[in-house]
Image (cartoon, rainbow, N blue to C red; front, side):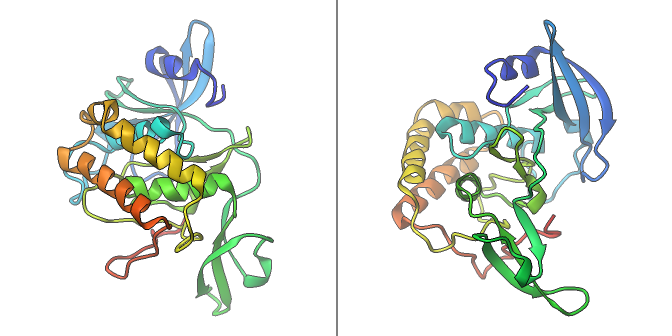
Length: 263
């Protein structure tokens, strides 16, 4: 089942979850599942709230709720692609259930030697590898990646690693793992700095205006079960700041701008 399938949200919400395995590289309990409803089956990721590790700087709500809130924000304006995501009961209690995205072989973020950067990619960081030789962090100059960069600013993504940017087999670019987003205090850490200081494209500005309108109407109520009132207010402030500046922000020296590890 593809993320664009109209039935995906219904299957995720009401289908029967069957746990098939655990994703061992995840920092919190993350389970691979199948979900079935009326003969329609899809693969999904299930993150039970009971398996979350407490974070001192995210004391309110749950990481699962923040994943759902990020999906709602992206979906409200079509700003970036986040796979359909719901909060529901499962075999290990309430948790986030997100449609599994089949990926293509081509990566969209890489750390490599300067000579090996693919044509057209944007270099984010120059550094030295373990052997002392030069390496760079770079990402694809792709419209889907650029939209995720804008979404990261809006949701104040604290952990956009390279492995959280997926090249979907359906040709779309997807962002996943949004559990530590949407804090009221600026904490943006992302590998997608390639457009820093550049003008916002008209299509992204239009989506930001649509998102601001949605937040002033039904979206705020939809976010309320997952976020605090100051966190919802901060979403609007970040949208307003982006539209007023008309450019992608640059890293701020007041905090670490890259996640670690990068992948």
